[in-house]
Image (cartoon, rainbow, N blue to C red; front, side):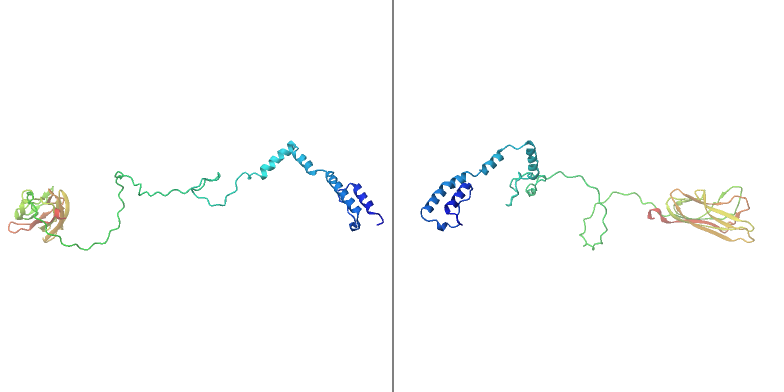
Length: 306
């Protein structure tokens, strides 16, 4: 505290520091001392500012110095790693219309709606007729419809051509025998000597056979009288094939025996009766006064009506 203001200012100015001189009691500086202090401070303040080192210039010199090769390679790697997407433009926030050109290329194609075309306006000419398709499956049968109204009467037609003559659809015969017949070593056709009915002559009295001229269903019946103490053994035959048998064992008395059958005949078929050959004594009885043996047949239904 005993030092004077002059000593304090000199010590501060001589130190060369950049700090401005201060006094603990500047209010005590009066008169010429205050004026001297102001002049000296104005002279020393620019020098103290110029004496400080220029740090920005040094930093600028270091920055302009060329980096080493290792540092340059590492800087390129870091730039590629951390600044890979810096070149890409950030997505825009404004609305993008479908007609605007694409902003940047992408791995996925951008959706572009197809234009709507009214094909009715672009209708072309009618094409050729296609081939006939396969026939489909039959559908379910529908319900029967109601009966329609009676139509008007048609006009009378023209007369047709003359047709063939109508064939007879009738056939019938009934014949008898008045003579007895005994068996022999061979088959014997039973001949008849009495003609009751022979429509259109279909039964041949000479051969003893019925010949079919009208095909259809026929009924045949055979009646005989047996002989005492002898067998009666006959067959009704169609085209040489035995159809039915008439048989009676030998007995002390004679009896009437019958057989009947229905046959379907075609045109030119033959039917007759024959006596079995003489392995055993075989006979039928009759006499000239009465007819004991009869053979009959007739058409039941024509084949065209079957």
